Image 1 (tube, helix red, strand yellow):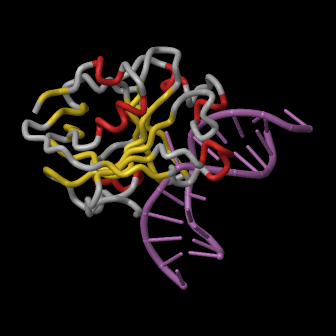
Image 2: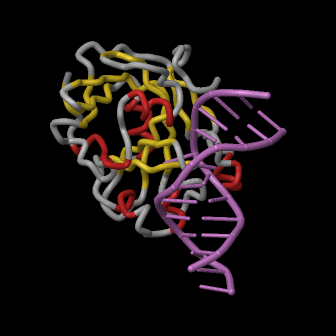
Length: 183
DNA sequence: TGCACGATGAAC
DNA sequence: TTCATCGTGCAC
């Protein structure tokens, strides 16, 4: 298991999103190490992407997306669910990758097939917002034995308001994986 | 200071 | 299809 370097995040968001599939999300909390394999993601490309939170510009909430790559952007949605993103590209370019589903690997209880569910199962909440993913307690790593899997491209979920951006295939998941949030 | 509205999930 | 529930962003 090899922790991903800063350079993994400091590049094209679509490329980073696709390569995050199959990687391991690791969170140490309360003396417990929880690990999930990332199987579904969505790319949010920056201020010009009408589906991205950063389309509203630099605000208190979105400032993490404008920050340096390799940090977590965690927010509360619908007043009750948390969503976890990985900030990508150079500082000032407000892009990120939303983690939509993971496959349980270690110490995972409950379902993980959805952005809110995976945060609940891995004990991720807003306290981890802006957390550096090159830290010791919260990071993403490449497994020692990652097999090459076919990737499916689909439109993103729940962003119908984003005009033509809603049609773009910026959702990626591992073909045939049973933990995908929706087909 | 008030208010409309979600990058969701679960129930009906 | 409906609803729970609250932080954020923007209008007043």
